Length: 397
Ligand code: MG
Image 1 (tube, rainbow, N blue to C red):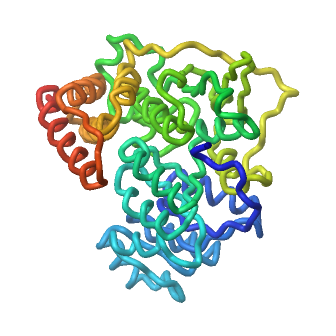
Image 2: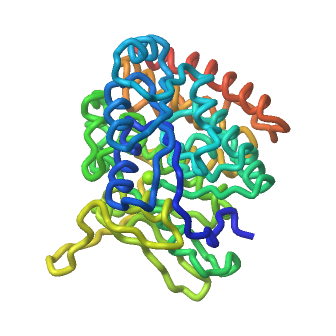
């Protein structure tokens, strides 16, 4: 059986967007604008930026808005910007809007592990999940996928790579897969020498050559940790083992991933590097929507370059495979230690080159086990963060 379901019925999806003010949120709104009458926004949630939430609510006629940050929530209430809108505050507010009965689909577009509880609650409430957040499956794939199966809801992959694979697999049999081939841009520093890597500053790591994404994802792409997270995510979404998942650097970010079949054929999905293509497919399948960004133009020349990734210079990818092969809480540890290291790098405390060291050392210190409950996952996550913080001390200046 497929972990993802290809037989989604055509319907007008009613969305709740967690992370409406972020990069995936922006792209989702662009897709909704390009497809009037086919997608509806029932609720939106954001962390702090209530002015932007108010603008979105006005444009799309959204009546339910959640604001995570307590101070921003108070300001929003007094701002007069939300007349006729129900406002929800804090973590409880996010939970409430995630399960609101007027919606059928939750767009999980926030980064990090905070999305875990609201996403699981939405699954329990019978909602399909359009999943952009990678950490959920990496941290707790076993529980997210089994809850989705038990409730009969769909996990729609919103990440460009997984959506590409989702598209390539339509009509295929799982037994015929030889390899899922996930493409990587290689990130900002793909051609850096070790010398150059020693002096990378947070502002350098926030400039991606092809994609315009949020800060956490951009830094993760610069270390290839992002690709590691995506390998683990692909394992959960498509039920394929680590040995059958390969990563290739595709410099132009025009091929978003591929599937190689047992007969040697390879199918690829191509589009310009904009998340709108993946989001549009995920939310409108089995129909095709209008494009929100100009598609590829083959009347002009362009080239595609492929090369294998260098896991010596970018060891985070190697550690992700290691974690996936170990299984159980090892991927939780991979994710938690990476979040800690990226946080410290962003604050200017940890040199970029040691992000991978923190991840690698935390993985080798923490003993992985098969978690029996979500609480055990959360405990492993918290423990890994402590260990990662301790390890990162020796690399901080
Ligand atoms: Mg991606």
